[in-house]
Image 1 (cartoon, rainbow, N blue to C red):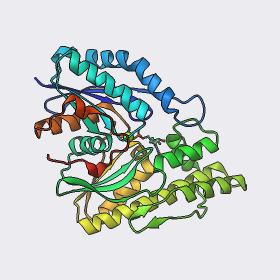
Image 2 (cartoon, rainbow, N blue to C red):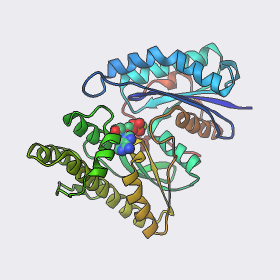
Image 3 (cartoon, helix red, strand yellow):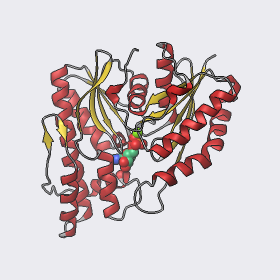
Image 4 (spheres, helix red, strand yellow):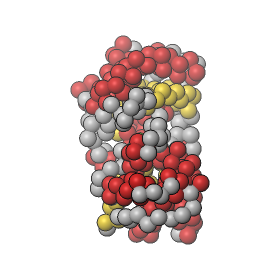
Length: 325
Ligand code: AMP
Ligand code: MG
């Protein structure tokens, strides 16, 4: 039997996943760094990953019922992400690979979010709506690359929500708390809706939302309006891409995709175009399993890496990667 180890560490989450050769998840352990104050401090986050690496790997192995010697392939998140975190996780992967003489593959984090969605969501060539902390992209596979149809021009949707949460005194990550507050809001406060062609911009929206709150609008109404505005912007770009590219399915992936209101809006949009909607439930946010899944696809397609090839790529883009599977 084949076993693949996936190590994820690009920002806040240290994830260790193990899958078998049939893409079944055998274990998926996550440890998430909580900033003491403010946003993610890259040095503290990488320190957290280093401290928790050994115990997390051991926990994942024991849950899967295997040892390091049983692994067929070791994989890790190579980029994009925070340099110190990427280096910590790459070092752990190289150590396991060298000590146990196992092949190693560095995986693009965004591609991994898409691959877990294709496998667990059961879709082949979907329109991908990828929304995480740092990334917001509408993507479609075309001629061997994940082509970015539209993306944020400034901050990612998740980071925008987290920044608003920080301003409002909500603990990190604020996305889920904003979702709860938004459910209690009902008054729509007009906020800047910024779609430029097929790209998006969220920074002006963030500032305006803070100002509305400072001028006396309730946090619930502001959270509601912030979600309605930013999610509508994303749906507009996704709808344009869906109609233009004639995709038959919409795949939502990334941590912000946990949001039920965003899911509801995309389900409605997809159904109006007779497209299927899907998402990898339980594997939306950063996790090690998605790294292992992408690595297994790469391995089956014949991709090989030497140790020199495993240098981290903190600014690697989704469309830099040749998709040969
Ligand atoms: P990721 O980087 O893919 O792990 O996604 C992390 C981002 O997802 C953070 O910015 C969170 O605030 C955001 N997030 C997680 N759950 C939700 C939710 N229910 N609603 C909105 N954002 C969320
Ligand atoms: Mg992510």
